[in-house]
Image (cartoon, helix red, strand yellow):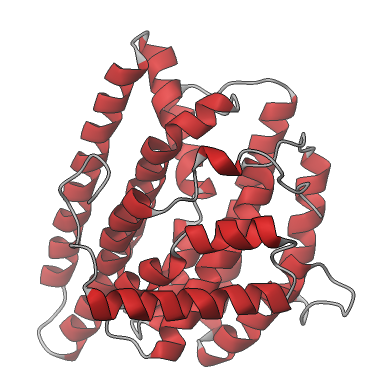
Length: 324
């Protein structure tokens, strides 16, 4: 069942559940070995995220190895994000900059140092298993997307430290940068076997499609995490819209749901336009593979955010510091 939407795939059947559990167990073992999770509390929370289910729906036709790699990238992204976004410890912009400088060094400077943190070691492992399979333009695009996510996260931390509140339009623009959907879309080019198609004259449509996917992910995430964010006094699309328009949170939630559903329709319209623009044959096949992979990511995200326990209130205490 999806959260406030009838859009997306049905839940996986019994074979899919078994596969998701196996992938989840593999992800947990990997995260434990690389110190990406620090204790039993974090391990339980990682299991509760149900990332095996997310990965299986995101790359449904992929091999077990590709599904596991997709789930491990998702775990890394979620756990790094949560160290800042869901830690009760006050996060200083300098701490954010320091961590992301180290993470960016991993993917631009030859890997993690032997004494690096669990996050650095995990990223090093993921990068070594992904980047060599991809083109130089892909590596440059991933680094650019992850660097922009790092910058947006630092901006967000600075605003929190200064007690600044963004207006609605500015929040929407930043949210598509902090949701990490674009780096994840880059990863799917590898694990779904759907590289960026070189469609002449299609660059603007490609970028618009990716931004629509990022908005759907970010806005749906905010609908699901609204209560958790409210408990901890974090800005969220629902609360920002309510504050700017002077309406109740229930009314704001309804408006954000409508926005999100409209954005899903935008995504599908852009996907159809992009596919129609490609010449029949090899070019269209490449575009269709990319569009299908990104569409699976959007549908999987909508489903997963309706079933994940990532935002449950029980995880509101006992969190580690942001850079531990």
